[in-house]
Image 1 (cartoon, rainbow, N blue to C red):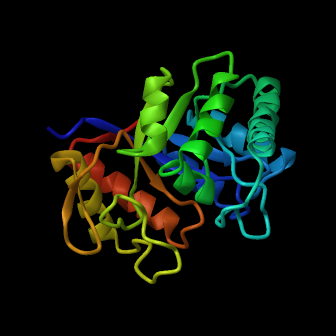
Image 2: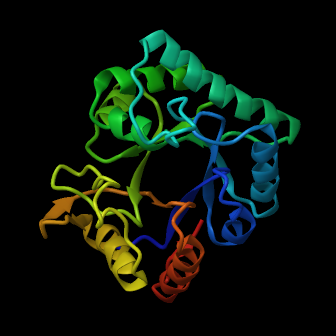
Amino acid sequence: MIPNAIDINVDVGEGMGNESQLMPYISSCNIACGGHAGDQDTMRQVIRLAKKHHVKIGAHPSFPDKVNFGRIPVEMPCAALFKSIKGQVDNLLDILREEHRSLHHIKPHGALYNLAAVDEKVANIIIEVVKTMVLPIKLYVPYKSVIEKLAIAQNIPIIYEAFADRNYNEDLTLVSRKETNASIHDEDYLFAHILSILSKQKVKTITGKMLDIKAQTFCIHGDNPNAINLIKNLGIRLKNHGIQIR
């Protein structure tokens, strides 16, 4: 059965400058908080836009690597990685308190997200950061991932995430950005991709296989050159199918 509402999230505060155009069409956002992009000014600006458009706010921590935009794994001692992730989330929390807003979720960025899906050590570090939060913060996780299993075992609230604008491998990992078919740019294909996940709980891999998947939120990357058009078109098509974005 197709749900009557879904969450659409976008990674923001990453220097694209398109947040004001994206916010009217999404229901949650993931704000870069200094690891791969972002600073106090950009965080505050994006928080205020999210507040204006009633968009849920998430932290988007990364490996501390602005040069590579957080898309390459960084070898770090566990304690150092914990300190970096927690520091990034705390930076966002400080500004959220000043703006009288709350943190809805945490979604790791780039290489940190991809590693947490398959690496128990990295996944546990992220979970330990979540456990330091006083309020019940949700964790956006991929289906059948290591971080999903560990979070469930430790009673961390999770929300299953799928990527609207990315293609999948047969192990449910994302196709590497080094490949030409990593991202989805075609509006028709993107909608078919999402509708398959919603209606059948299946995703078509780049090899043509249909694999089981679950998703309660869908991400469109804010740095996708066609992000605004993709999101606008998606909203219209979802509405025509009786599906709200919220």
